[in-house]
Image (cartoon, rainbow, N blue to C red):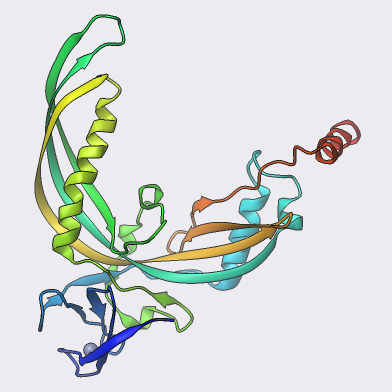
Length: 263
Ligand SMILES: [Zn+2]
């Protein structure tokens, strides 16, 4: 259950704005304006929405297709799996366009010699930060379909869809950015440096956008276990899908063998 601490009036339209513990950027469900509670009164945030293009039935179809394809999946997955739950959620993201500049020093050791290395890495990123704290969402694997973005329009959110407000504001998202980019640059450098002695990253933030993006969450059951699939509601792409492990029991092996031998 959602815990509502109190309500205030929407600074834009006067409708009650529910304040949920932990949420910082609240979107009014009447007029669709967005407010930063950390900054206080009358701070309007420009935000966009990426409309969802799929119905429940479409999503069932996409899941079935996904289950049939790919050689890593059990052969009978699409036949035996039961789709238990399908739910659309709009997730809040900050998209930060940033020019990152990392200066590094390190040592290349893998040839047996210790070769000092230093240099700089300059990159431009459209970095995504999800505005929810306790989320397992695979942000890195998700290509936000920004081309489908429109000005925020509350009517694009159907009654059945869940809408999540952001638990952090723009400033906090920006402060998370530095650490994440430094980690990412370290990872890029690991192909040419074995020991990174120092890295200094400076960021030049060009633009920050706040976007609500549609993600379908699908739960299915197969062989007595539950699995999950995440689908982009703008493109229909599977963002991530749990695949059941092949049956390695004797019975499963024989079944596979029989199939192999007798078609
Ligand atoms: Zn309002």
